Length: 268
Length: 260
Image 1: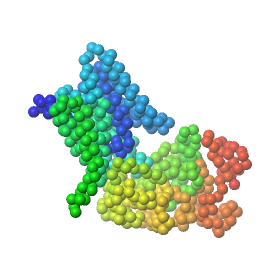
Image 2: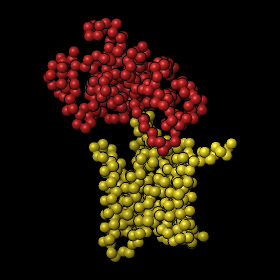
Image 3: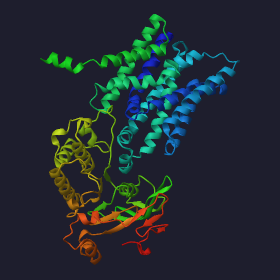
């Protein structure tokens, strides 16, 4: 069944969405959507590096995103730099450098639209292995740093004072984000990765009573978005990444309906 | 050894000294209160003591394995984070249901266990933070203006609770307070800050001190006097000190004759 390109894309998409949901929760709790965007935009540069160095695409994207994540981690420790301006600068510069470098590499035929908007046709069997191995590793690490990361999200000083080592948790979290971006690039594309992180998490907020529950619901909504979006993309020949994000957005709109009132009227 | 110890500690940030020449120790079973005007470095001193900031000069030591319960001055939790009071309590430690209930009972909000923290009033949230800090049975309880937004009766109850906890847990308490008259009775040591250590001692010793009497009119002047006394010098942005007589010196020393 893995011979079917659609099944492969579906499997990879589900694996990515399941891990993007919980990480996405932290991104909205910490108001880091712009940070995610910056890492995502650097993914194109990573793709160029991967092609030039002839290494695996996912690995190349991860290495470059991870480098930028670590650089940002240390730059943000200096309070003199406005992190918003810094992110805006790095985000678009890295995207522009990626685009320019790609244009110069005339000897290699690269599907630019595939990078930018996702390309389910390019998902291989090896990708499935890479995605599930990484997703499991990301999940394990996230569980490991869950308590300190949550404590640091509520208040970094408190986490530091009570021996939670928030610096280490933050650094690991940034590397996990770089990893998720690397594995989701083929499915949703560079420009839409942040949406896969943020929208299911935002949708989950309405139904969650605890941080842990919100992470699980976000994962479920992400998976539903991938399944719906890819199916739509197959039916109507729409770009895979965009279709997934539209599906996620529709789920978000549905979540805005007055569910509590509906539940209340049923109980009467 | 004491739980935390600052020795001539100072913090230099953004081209100015936030605090300088701070000596501070907190021992087990001791309540130490920091007072001083806004921007005098009370919170900064606490953060140095806890190792949140590294001192730019001097030393800051924490007892190895020190278990801290900390109530920061401000906590802003994004509304997208669903957090009940119950869950907030186990933020940094696993707690049993009993421990959670006990802590909420102590601060007087057992009915709010399942409430979302975003729906709490300022005073209720402050109590929840306090419950969180004490639930983990700390060696050192650090409270940065713990009663902000709490009503008068609640304030008295919370300060009584702090004294009780000190007795039952034998923990040290480092307290920042604006209401010295409230904490006077239970405080062992008062440190008055103004960018550096202005004066310190037990409330009793300070009030029996001759100089203190001359300044504040004897014991009749209640504890508020300590808090409201006039600071005779200002710390300039470049770290120098301007004294009441208009002179400017590089640093702030008690022996340089400028202190009243």
